[in-house]
Image (cartoon, rainbow, N blue to C red):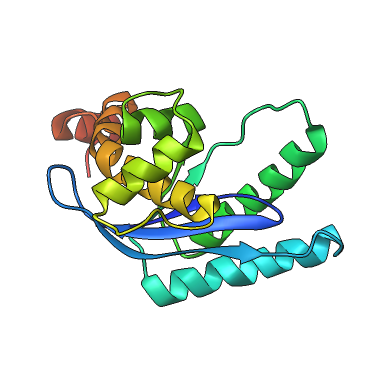
Length: 183
């Protein structure tokens, strides 16, 4: 399965594409960032992020998109920009009918490093190792996007089983026919 990971940010929105499946070798397809100028109006910056994400979706045709879940920080302005960039990525995926998964930073760190409290250097080192790269992807936003994609690849089967288990079961066919009445 191919997954596009998105580490949302208004100035640097990390994007990374990984091919793989649980129990199989992972392969980095591409990694980078969509950049916007901090001096530009927010609306213009969001349009640039939308265009950038759309280009990544066109170029790499992922089967799913994994986006970092926005969490509360002390700096409300930073949170707002991150949430807006996150919404743009979710919208781009939804427009194409792609499944979107939101993963918390600690969930991603735990999946990739084994510790939900790992720092950026540890995440970068493990992404490098897992994808058999010569050096950590730069900037760190690109490595974080790859970590999101890896996390999703490894956790998607479990998330799907939980989603199916929580979904209301369809009544047996005989029960449906009884409710409808005779034909």
